[in-house]
Each structure stands twice: as structure tokens, then as C-alpha cells.
Length: 76
Image 1 (spheres, rainbow, N blue to C red):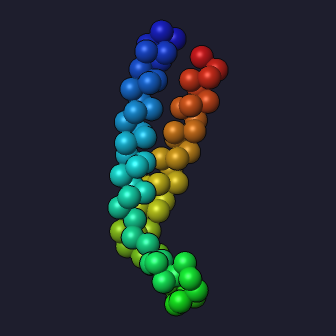
Image 2: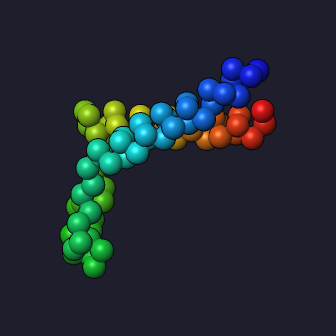
């Protein structure tokens, strides 16, 4: 139990860095014009393919792992 308690902050730092990297590497189609209504529909709805789909799923998995590690940190 002491090993988990001492390793959990380091695990959270690693997961958070990977989560930040996965989110920042995702390409978004919304530009400044999309905020004002120009070309909003063509950039907002598209099918994710290839690396974009992998990064999307990786960011979801990393977010879940981070939430679980934060919950474990509260419990232990």
C-alpha cells in the first residue's frame, strides 16, 4: 500500500503529460471564422480516420485513467 501511495503522484504526472500531448496533437477544423458562423457545418462534422481517430481514442483512455488515478489518490 505504501508503494502505491508513493508512486501515484508520479503516475498522475506521466498520465497528465501524455493527455496534454494527445489533446494538443489533435487537429481541429474550426478556425476563427467558425466562431462567427462562416463555414461552420463543413468543418464541424467529419469522420475521424487514421491517426486522428487513434489520438481521439487515446485521449479518451488517458482521461479515464487520469480520473481513476485521481479517485485512487483520494481513497488511499
